[in-house]
Length: 255
Ligand code: 13P
Image 1: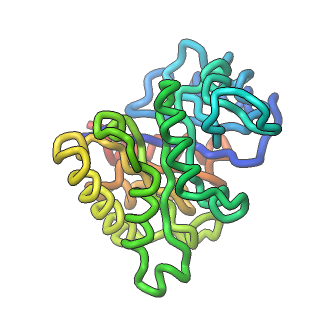
Image 2: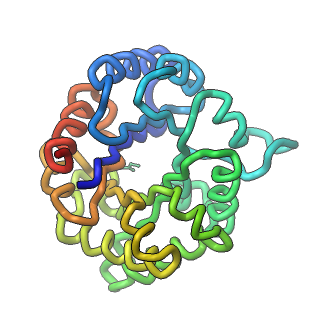
Image 3: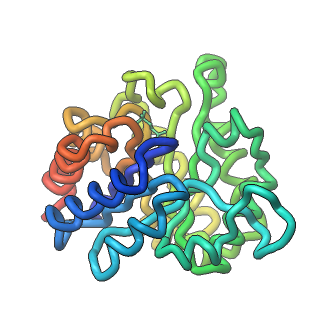
């Protein structure tokens, strides 16, 4: 059975000290996690958390990056800077960045390419709004977002990604997608990936669900065959809650 991928997206929360303390506790609690555990602190805390996690099995992700390598891009952070801070993953195309900061499919595509060039694993986020779901547009929206993000990315590189399905209506609302709703979209994403990278590689790409994941719904969501893990927002800010999500995921997908 595939091992779970559990990622914490801390968004704009936690000081440097709070982030480093959390990372220290996580490293101590999960010296050999059954699967992949990732935390994505704010930019300011990356280097400090990177130091704490050195030599541990916990992965460090940034929440965004810029596609250029360097230059006059005030306020932006390049992929190599993230690697320098200890990151090996980066979240790209989160719905908050798409909606609030007006990120386009083209930008997201450039960011995926830049991350891959630097050796970072992109955690590419896709997902529909409530309005799109109600108009039966979930599949076309997810397909468009995927195709835009993966434009001109080779199949060899696509298999290095993780993909997060985060329905916008489930983020921070307490209303998670049901396991059946989430599985349906994950299966659809897997089918698109099969067309691009072939059945074997598509089966190995972690497809993770995000949107009001909590300790209590983790097991049910991860019991689905195409849900390989979770991208957790609010419930990842509290250590006990995030630790319980990791444990419940391992129970469901561990061997
Ligand atoms: P919540 O878990 O708070 O719904 O957030 C999900 C999310 O956006 C993770 O990237």
